[in-house]
Length: 393
Image (cartoon, rainbow, N blue to C red; front, side, top):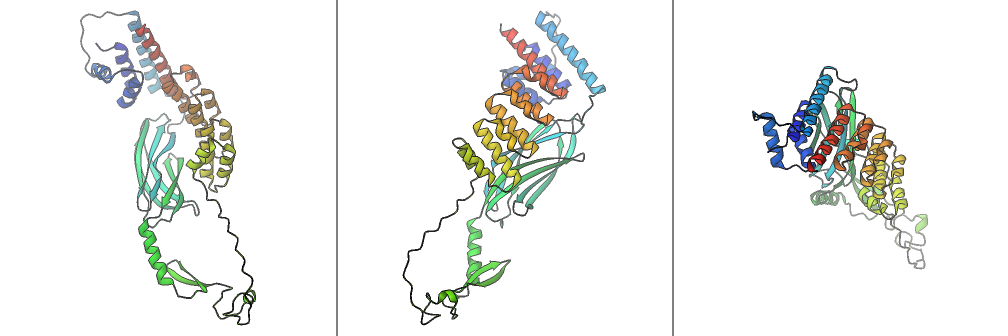
């Protein structure tokens, strides 16, 4: 027989406007089986008529609580709290952020509706930026209806002619005169076909003159003179002791072994810096400082904080949103809800506290949540957990 507490919980959450998928995920997290949940859903939509009702003290308490919750929900509908009608939080999760030119970058957009308006349309713009010019090499725009919390896997194709290097994926959501922005670092690799085409074009530019540097610029062959150069029939000052061909009376100098040039160390990727931060955070921070793009530099510092479980790195970040996400991630990794208090954005702070309520069953954070709806949901999860404990005992 299905437990009445589950039925009441589902009915109450439906009254608040939550979708069935979100309700099912919460109940599964608290140990209920799919069979129990399906039976409860069937009871909500096709209630069984019983001629005898036996009410225990726990059942009476649940009925009273559901009644009070329904009254509260009705008051919320007719007398909504003052606040932002439209307010969004945007987060990006990487799936495939390294791709060949002509392939696709794949990522997940997680959009949270933190406003009081339950459903509205927004314009979402996705683009890949060249950090050298801050201009998009490709972009994709879509219109989408936002409800509560949604995650969408997205692909954006890299143009085949894109040059090898590091780029920035940026997503911008325009709504109600405001913007929600999030970025991810991506790397584009040049395909072997592009290299072959460039090699063929360069071959066409060769002029067989060893004293010119042959190059292709904007599809035009350029032959830049090399000065000084032994073989151009000009006896330059520096060639008098070196080049008999241009300076016939020149004497050959003593042969010296040339020094081996020191190759400059390449820039590390953010993931490589994160691995370095686990053993040498000081060097990792120096590597982050070499990144010229502010957004990527902030992301890099955030990764060091996550690797070290140290919130002090978040304070070094310039972007307010990236700093808040840094605090939120470290709070989760360190299992320390007090770090959520460092977050300045109300929506991200509430999400940080709700993570502890849902994943850690730490309901002491409920009173710290600012959004009224989320605080009520947190309180209801706590009461549902207490009911489950009473039922087991």
